[in-house]
Image 1 (cartoon, rainbow, N blue to C red):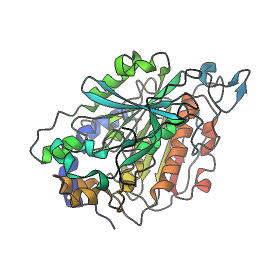
Image 2: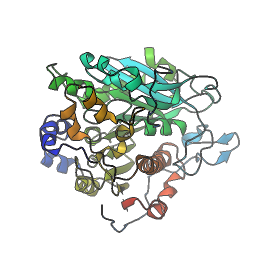
Image 3: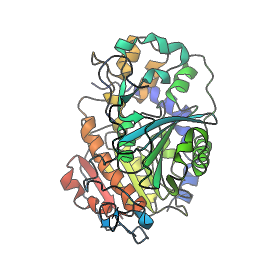
Image 4: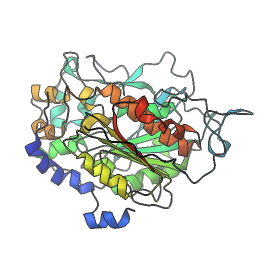
Length: 420
């Protein structure tokens, strides 16, 4: 059953989504050429099909090694960086257990998922995220533990980072309107397991807590996604305090930016610092000095950000570029939100309705979930496959870009694939 309250969508997106779109369409045209939680209980640790147009992508750099090729001392990435061997099928998780740490930088709360020392997860309890922390303070106590939709993570808290390999490239993710840092958890941990340090923040003014609060009498902080990204990148350039464990273990010259919805629009102009840019349910990507790979992702049945926006964005983006459109699915295919359910089967929105969470009915305008859509797990597999292939091709200097050959034959649920 679809619960997208579309009449309210215009109000919400004019005040929230639109804040992250370039100042004008003319400006944009000028610059452009997780396991979802199910069981209740307390935490254990804190579309139509379109024909394909394809041509080989040229990354502009000769690989010094591939993540799947063995050198004298084992698999190597860019510039001979030592790595563990990863499955050639980029939809499969990699060999690293995933560590998770929470950090505070200025006014941002960050979550960092990273390749941990193999074996260090033995005997440790997996992380379980409490989504109630993304509700306004006055609403958090309304949902009891036994009714909560816990978000279970294939990750472990505070594991030692794997110092025998790397340094690792970095992926920065920006959540969507009324989202939160773990909203797309399956992707975060997948990339980390394959040799990336992944960072996501709760973005003030865009965060679920702030949006609901603004609808319930609490002033919302000013939204500044560009400033947030600058803060994150600067902190990663010289990791200190909560991020100190990353010192010497990350390569910020090999950076990717990605985001969903408002976050997808926010990364449009990050090609000055990011080699790979991957907007999800956003638009396209503007040229930039560092930019070497563009991957535009969209859902062809999206009721919130129409798919033709991704098609236009792709057309305006610089090559090398790819477009992947998922058939028969909606806006939240790039998140965990439709699959977050409690032990009684109540989803995220039903739970908020049942416990009278202030503002939930308004936030429901963005809840584009439908039982007739492509199952989340099938969509996640495709997204993990194509995003990991794009990341590894450029940031690990691997042959993973070959995975785009025959893509729609492998995944019939891809309604459109374009490559230039």
